[in-house]
Every structure is written in structure tokens, then in C-alpha cells.
Length: 326
Image 1 (cartoon, one colour):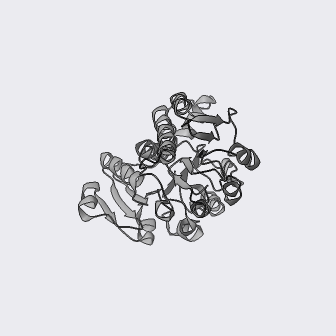
Image 2 (image 1 turned 30 degrees about the horizontal axis):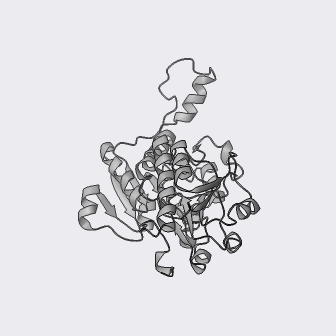
Image 3 (image 1 turned 90 degrees about the horizontal axis):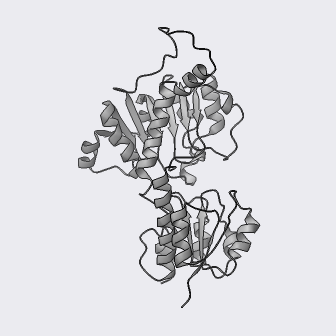
């Protein structure tokens, strides 16, 4: 029996590529760009496996154009870029890469929080441009992180990792999540379960860690931003459309909240007009999982997911297992 045929939409770290070339008959996009839909459709012809990235839209048209496809392995935790319903109808397994990027993404959430709170980017630009002449008592005054109140929206793996880091800053932790944690786990994280509204009203920093679904679209909008303190900051390393970006720009422009740190955007890579002109927001290019180790581990998991499904071995990362025909 020959190696399974797999199409990869964009080149991954070299250890992952070596693994895939050894274990699959691999075709891939060697250019460092996002493929157009028609290119993906052409790429999956005759392939049993597809490894997609979060930047790829794998919709019904793509799925129905690939009669030999058995598995779509997403190189991400989130999978809102894939029409899972259409995949399930065609008995195609959809897999993701949970867990492996938890700590790295939590690190970046904290990097954004600290950077916007202490005005690090503003200070860096000011210093590099030669404007700094001497120390001054009111130069770039920011906000304290230690002893403040952190609100976590979504207490899954990444939300819990963010909460663990808060202990070192002696912060009070509030959280709102679809499912409440067991009391023992709450105590270990020193976290208090509250309503969404109470979290918005009490927190000095709010970090978003819910998945993007129809129910979380614009989960933070004009109403929610107005509930926040004028001194509060919003951090988003989850998915862009969870936040109404237009409403956020207005809130940042008019002092409704103090600032924001964003790694994701509503219409990536486009930014809402006015966002890049604001000094009270830190903007990163969706690099939450971007460490060498984590991106390599993600790739290995995505590759192993494909192989497991195509060789009939158990795969715990199939997100639509319940709907598949055995």
C-alpha cells in the first residue's frame, strides 16, 4: 500500500516538512502566500488529506470539489475557517491542534497586557526618534498591573494559563465562561466566577479566550465597551470578530476605555480605519503561537492527525467525530 496523498496549503517548519515527506506523498504550496480558493481546489484533487491554515477558507465549494478527501487537518486550535457541517456531510474528519499552543499564546496575551499598560511601544518610538532629552516625573505614565483585577472571558486551556500567570502579579482574577470550573479548580487559580456584565464593570484588564462561533460574534461590542472602566484595557488573542472593531476604535478614540492590545482582527489582515493611527493600542500580526518550538509542535500534531485518520488509527483531535460514519 502506497503512502497517502496529502496537500499542504503553505510550507511549515522544516522538521514538519521532513516528517510529511517521509510518511506521505506530499504536494504543497512552496510560496509564502495565501492560496486562492481555486488553487486549493486544484491542490486537493486526488488527495486523501488536506492540511490547512487558519488563513485558508475551506468552505462547501472546496469540500464538494474534493471527492477523495478523507481528512482536513487545521494547523490551529480554532477551525471557524472550515465548513465543518459540509465536511461532516461528506464524512470528512476535521482535526485541530489543541493544547500545544496554550502556554505560548498565554505568554503573548501577557506581553500585550504589559506592553499597552506600561506604554512600551510609545516609549520605544519616542526613544529611538531622539525625542528623549532627560528623565521627567510624568513621562509616559502608565497603569500598574500588580494588584489589579484581571477579567478572563473564556476559561479554557489558554484562559487558565493566563490566570496562572496572574498569581505572580498578585492580581484578583474574575472569569466568565460558558461552563463554570469545579470549585477546587477555581481555588487553585484564585479565580472568581462572575456574570459577563460584572466582569466588564470590575476588571482593570480583560483578556479574551473564547472560541469564535455564531454565538460569540461581536461578543464585545459598543454596549460591553461602555460597561468597562475608563481606565480598563482590552486584550484579544483569540479571534478578531469576537470584538466589534468599529466600536472598539470609537471607544479608544473617545476615552471610553484606556487602551487595547490586539493580535487578531475582524477582517485580517485589514484593519478597521483609524485603528493604526491610535497610540493607545498595540497591534501585532496574529503571532500568538509564533515561537519556533510551538509552531513546529503544531505542525507535527497536524501531520500526525492526518496520518492517524488516513491509516485508521485513533485521533483524539477530530472535532466532528460524532457525526462521522464509522
